[in-house]
Image 1 (cartoon, rainbow, N blue to C red):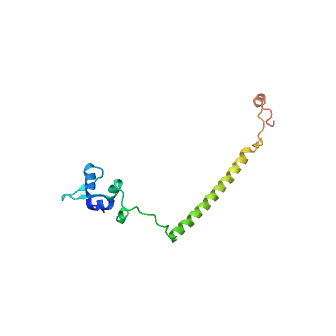
Image 2 (cartoon, rainbow, N blue to C red):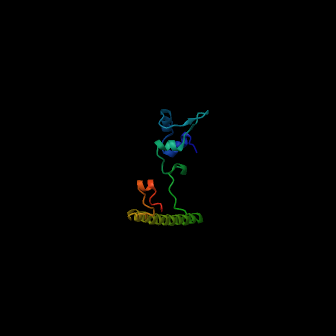
Image 3 (cartoon, one colour):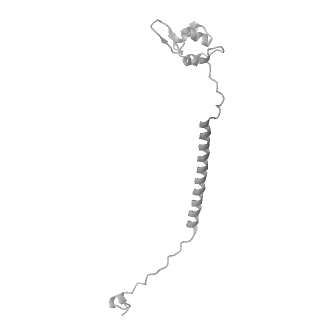
Amino acid sequence: MKYTAGQAAKAAGISKATITRALKSGKISGLKDDSGTWTIDPAELHRVFPPVAGAPPETQIMKRSAPPEETSETAALERENQMLREALADARQERDRWHQIAERLSIAPPVPAPDHSKPAAGFWSRLFGKGRGD
């Protein structure tokens, strides 16, 4: 809801002449319609001139209301939040367990693989055929 110059003067507790002077000097901004009436946005007015105690409710600062009662939606969101926290804790435990296994495997010495192959035959044995079971 926009103010006229007279309404703005009442809301700020100052004279109409002060409002029009501030408009003309550019201290506050407003629009002048075809009939010559000023319209001023309340936020623009109170940026420069603070509201008086008996000002209309739309010009006073809104107070925070008390937190709303717990509804079924908030209860459902709280349950979901708790379930997600538990799942996260389980995932962290599983991660830690795999990390411990990886550490144990990296610390243990490697077990050499048994060598089941025959030793390679020498050059002369391969050349003259010795060791073929002749």
